Amino acid sequence: MRNGGGFEGASGTLVLIGGGDYEQSEQVDRVVLELAGGAATPVVFLPTPHTSRRVGEKFAAYYQSLGARDVTVAPVYEREDAEDEANARLLREAGLIFIGWGSDLRLQQVITGTPVHAAIEEAHRRGALLAGTSAGARVAGELVISPANGPVGLRGGLDPGPPHFNYEVPLDQKTVLQVWPGFNWLPGFGVEAHLAEWQRYGHLLLMGAIRPDITWLGLDERTAVIIEPGGSVRVIGSGNVVVARRTPSVRAVEPRPGRALEARGLRLDVLSAGSETSLDELRRPVTD
Image 1 (cartoon, rainbow, N blue to C red):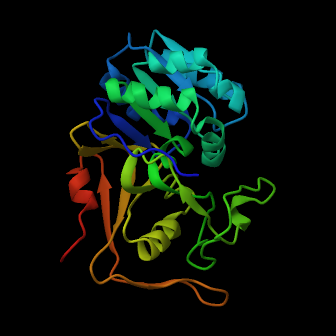
Image 2: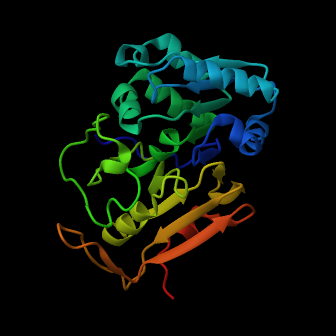
């Protein structure tokens, strides 16, 4: 499942949010709406990661409570919806596109290679703000880590099989992770969400150790990174963003049955509201 090649030259801002109930992210969402142009900007919500129609209704009511006057839900739930030119037109004309929470794999399976997929990228390139929370943030990276919680990865490692997601297995009972290509809207990065709340630090440590060619961003709920068109990056919200980066001395032994991950030389940085950096700096290998 190989996807696009990033947004070099795009005119729009990219905002990645670590999840949480919409109302709990009001501080972040007020900033997002203002960055997108304020109350009059056309807001289009993409509910595809989740199967419930009520997710879109809840989002629309919430964003209207923030003052947004033009909020639409693009009814893209199945592949045929993503092929519908009317839905693509909605997204193409948006000033703010917001991708919601749910299954990142489902989102990719439904929209990849469709008119809706192309419309999202076209709108962002011409200047629309593109925001994603939880699954909507995770798919933005070059690679996606499959959902799991706790120490999975540190002990279980990776499942090399094709992408799948078994909803019958609770997240806290999964024993291995899966990794597959994301939409690559943020080349050179992988994104994880719900970091502190769902104890997903192990994902960053594992992937930082065995895929040190990628910079890994772990986002707490109610916390976001704002990536401007020129590549500047800043953090807003009440939690942290943890960055796992490569160093020349990274050495790792992958986990296997009976032995957990061993990793040396991995660099971690912890950012919070007001922290500023750049994509170039975050991609650069640490030398000290």
